[in-house]
Length: 196
Image (cartoon, rainbow, N blue to C red; front, side, top):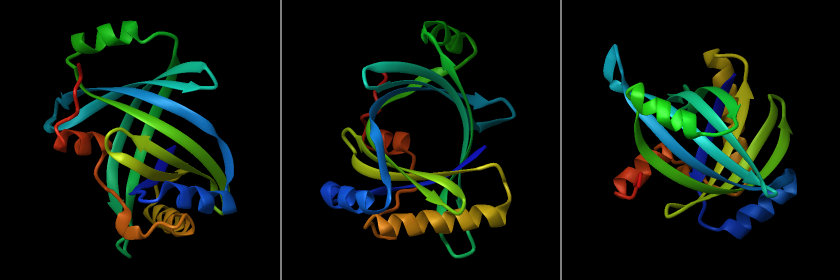
């Protein structure tokens, strides 16, 4: 599956919540605590191979995931851009074994990130869309909108991108608030991406 998604800065959290409640169904709150491990790709050292260990907490239930994601930014003919990610994810019982294995495989712990999420869902002609209002300390609030696609077709991706932009507008956020940098890049730019 491919994740087609965008994220945008949120200036007025309460106004966005009101808009989301007008067209989408609230589906809960949770928090995510992520550790990112990276190493240079052997055939292209300027590219990084990335693995993420996520602890997700919802209703006092804790679930851990190991994720390998291939991320890229794609831009359609009309100039709309979004992330297009191919993700492989598995539930794990304990991260200690993986935390021990990854350094032996050449990975370095590069980033940590905390995310506090309120989620809404709605139906689109492309299937379910998830809309997550996220607080990323200390970066602030963002709205992430995602639709999953089984197709890697460029035209299909552009149609989904247009739908993401429509949902962004329905949420009361102007497209000039879209953020194409990854959170880890923003955290590094603020020199606060500590792994300690």
